[in-house]
Image 1 (cartoon, rainbow, N blue to C red):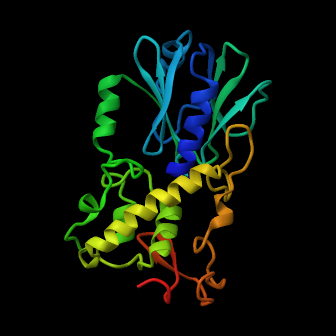
Image 2 (image 1 turned 180 degrees about the vertical axis):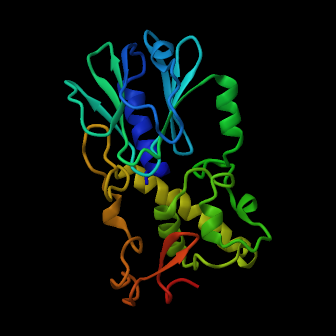
Length: 267
């Protein structure tokens, strides 16, 4: 599943390639995604200029001239494609033709993603339900620390508490600070919260700088793969030796997800 770093890589790409371009054509091949694409999507987007592109949590947001925003969420398997010429691929659901001849395409094999056309108020409503961005100053130890029985990994993955961190990066962050993912937040000290916050920013920035993590579906819009998977310390390394102590990496199911950790390095 694309997480914050992957969404940020895609956002930066289109901020360079699409801003200032006008949408000359829109094709919707399939509307029944996780949220059905509005019937008036094509007419509302065609002819509009892309004024800016940014990310909020895992959403990719295209701000259109004259008001309105197109929000893409990659879900479990979605990806964004930037192509000229464009040849339709299986699982392409939406294609925007720009005035430079390039297409911006949303492809999603599992159809858990979303393509939303929203006005400013609807955008604000979505944003109000999302926690602070972990790369921002608002995400700090004082904010993170809380007397909760919820495990620390679940807190990091709760989008209403912290934006955009998923299973990959929560696992990697907690290994790097030596904290077991199953520990209750009430047991996490202020000093540990400081370390978690610091390592969150470092790990996410490294993932962005290396192009994100390609495990199965994710690619950058040019089709290149990311590189952060080469830096995995625990994620999907069950049974392999820990790079620090040599013990076997373990995996347990928590909340329907696999949690990867080292029982010796993490306490």
